[in-house]
Length: 324
Image: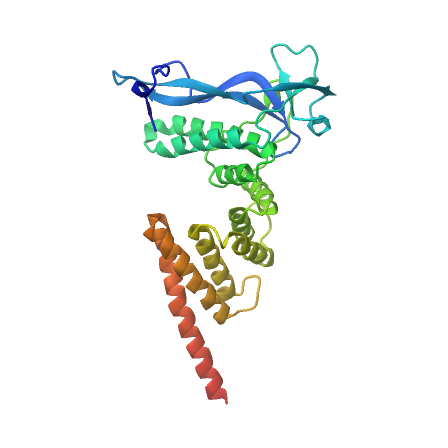
């Protein structure tokens, strides 16, 4: 998406503003997936000037910080801060401690919004020559989703999980300020990161987080294969999401049908499999009718599953009658 500068005379296309634009202020988080340190980002957008020139401009920074004094805390001790998120200013700090904390965006919704903006822009870059711009957008999205997750936003965890699950940054993930000044432990692989992110989202009761965690457990990505635990996640996902989008509950129903049809984490049960395939057909058809063409293949699978289960039940009943 390119912003038309004619809509706002304060926005202009600059050729020296990068997609991902770091500041000198760093924010401390203790979670090993999110932290330990994330930078301030200048929020930039693609701009087209009236003469057709394409460039970028800054529109904000994240966090748009609001500071309060705290008892000094060091790296790795962010949870000891009295309130807010401790920060470290590499340009002015006189020691290695944080003396103030940011209390802006306490629930991480601004970070989530900006992260989604970059993610959407990145998905729009499909030409080979735009590869680095695409990766840079996802790098910015990763940092912003990590800010959101670090501030307790469960959707931030979910979105971060997708960044890692699909390796959107192609290995170019932000490590920390200490990458350039000291030793840091190796970053876990993207499957492990995705698993941890989806786990956080699932534990917060996010339906999509539950079924994505179930997928990881089914496929053994970032964890050992555990069909029983995956089935439990799918059941929770349906319970949490059945009043929401048919994209979610239809997709979850398809996963439950597969489990019962293939005895994954449960006994083989054609009746239950038919039940869930039927629900999957309903949800996925609603999604496809609403423009979700990407769900066509899943709808076909669900429809085929209904026919297969009906045939399996007929054969099962025939065998039982013959035995009598």
